[in-house]
Length: 399
Image (cartoon, rainbow, N blue to C red; front, side):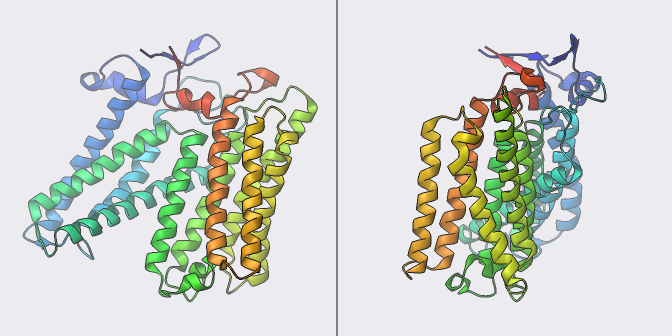
């Protein structure tokens, strides 16, 4: 059985905004544990969104028979309401885990490191990703239900209930996601966001044969999906730079060579994020040389990190090093296939993107397992293993 103890700083117990709220709402407080506190606050957030969403939905749907998907349908209302609820719940979740009584020079929440914290553009990008996932997710679910219940109308009252439940569930999940944010969970959000954004762009493309050119054809100004595709890349790039900062914060730096290696590793990951965002900033049909330069630079930065990893991070397991080298060799082989005409560029880009981001996810778990103990070399470990409990409470779990 796992119990949780409050995070302490200098012998003082840290009190989060969520715990203060639960002290006021005694009836909803439940057991005196940080996990129960956040769970109860998440339920309150979901209930609040439900209380707001139901009368609005009922007023909009009253006296109408609604379609399941399409313009003005319950799917569209659920998607828009879910996106709004995701942003609100995400902001509340980040606020709830901020310790109230701490010095100003200490990290403000469990996802931060000493001397650094999540910037406004970090939070805006992550909140947008949650909103996009909620919006596209409910749109997709509505379209599937439309195919299962062909031409079935939905009456106003049950339609309002369905939309309200969707909004409340989105708020509940996004609040807990924000409160338990770590580099590892953020990487999973990034992956889901990229997949959903890419597929939405493919489905919305005005050129059904875009795949005959390359993946960047989705971002051409002549394509109806260009804004969605390019914005997905820009937001994803910002999230990668955020992950890069915090995923490397807890790496061991006992010797100067380790510190230099960590700086190079972090810079390489940040470059991948910057180049990814620039791919969206500079569409291929308007900035062809620059677009190709940043796209190639992203692959080169990835290759340098993977090949030099045993020197940048000497404590990295050798099996992971071999794992990365195999990825680089596969990407090089894909390049040969493209040069010989066996693969087109779209296939090469898709497979390379999957390899790069899957490597980043596995690297986050590996880096978290070798993070330095809190306080070593004057730094605090904030990798996935170190922050999993802190960000979700912020508390430390003990067996």
